[in-house]
Image 1 (cartoon, rainbow, N blue to C red):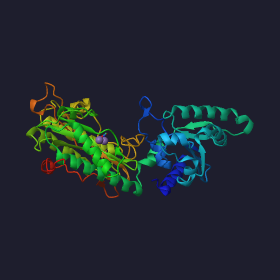
Image 2: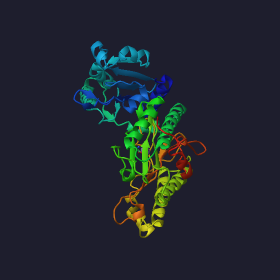
Image 3: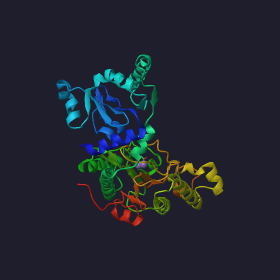
Amino acid sequence: MVNLIEVSKRRNQIMKKLGKGLLIVSSLPEATYSNDVEFKFRQHTDVLYFTGFPEPGTTCILEYDGDKVIYHLFVRKRDKLMETWNGRRFGTEGALEKFKADNAYENGELEKFILDLFKKYENVFYELGNNKSTDELIISSIQKAVKSQDKTGKGSTALINPAFEIHELRSIKSSYEIELLRKVAKISAEAHTRAMAVSKPGMFEYQIEALIDYEFRKNGSKGPAYPSIVGGGINGTILHYIENQDELRDNELLLVDAGAEFDSYAADITRTWPINGKFTESQKEIYQLVLDVQLACIAMVKPGVKFWDINEKSIELITKGLINFGILGGDYDKIIEDKGYKRFYPHGLGHWLGIDTHDTSYVDRKIETLKPGHYFTIEPGIYISDEEDIPEKYRGIAVRIEDDVLVTEEGYDILTSDVVKEIDEVEKLIGSQVLP
Ligand code: GLY
Ligand code: MN
Ligand code: MN
């Protein structure tokens, strides 16, 4: 359930940052799964962040005159028939009582109210591109408000994208959020541990996926925060492999990237392990390199450090390691200059994490200096194809190790550390439990 104090604090914080005007955030449209069946609805992250209101068809308008913030919430109309078929609605009454909106309206009234509000303010803060019908309504209402300017002497003139300010605010996690992030990290780590413990050759990728889903749900999560990646052998080299259909074979690695969503917050963990419980020598070499890189990168995390400097470190260490194994040939400086390492390490070191798995992307990882409360993944990986120019013993090996790291005043805290990653610990865990 929504934390009313927390969401109210956020509404005040964002309007102080943006200044006088109106901030508008809206639900995304519902998406069709098949015919008249829809995907499960998930509220747009900004709507969740400022209101906690979970239903589709919602628009939140924050009105700020430089003194106080007025919270208007437009929600779906109560409808007995629709509620019998598709579930309960809070309606305007619930918006007022349970979500403490200052004013609640049925969403059909948005057009009428928006024009009056627009005539009062010069700045409308709204991010275009999420919801076509709200976009159209806002643009046409701004035009109408501007046209009425001569008569009233006032009128909204500027449409300003607030995404950067919103993301900047969202990127620093509060102590309330950190507790939720700890909880979802713990649920996710437990699911990985369980998957590792029951692994054995002959299982199928989807069985591991199903077990992880079950472990998430069993512990109160809504399910995965993103489609789980369960890739055995060469499938692990496909970065967003989500088919999860193949059999897990002896002597191959299994790469599992899965994180739960709990109370809207996400975790994002990857572990890679030998399906039969014992790394081969070449798997061990690649795995240990990725692990060493990950540990070295995590050790750099503290306030004042640039995320991108840690990213550069991961490139340096992976490139040197791959040269050492004879997988990359030639001059180190030239490989760095030509980005030759990208064939084996094609993604960045990590991303911000929070309500979205790929959170607050307007906060530029290339320039941002770490601050306490920043939260992100550290996920180096090496993906080796089975092409002929690769030394045979390394072909088809894919390793990624991903943890979720919080920046603290002193340094860092790894919230996903409950799931093991050292080679001896991993080998010991695999096959130690059986599925009922
Ligand atoms: N699970 C998606 C990612 O690691 O970025
Ligand atoms: Mn990630
Ligand atoms: Mn991941």
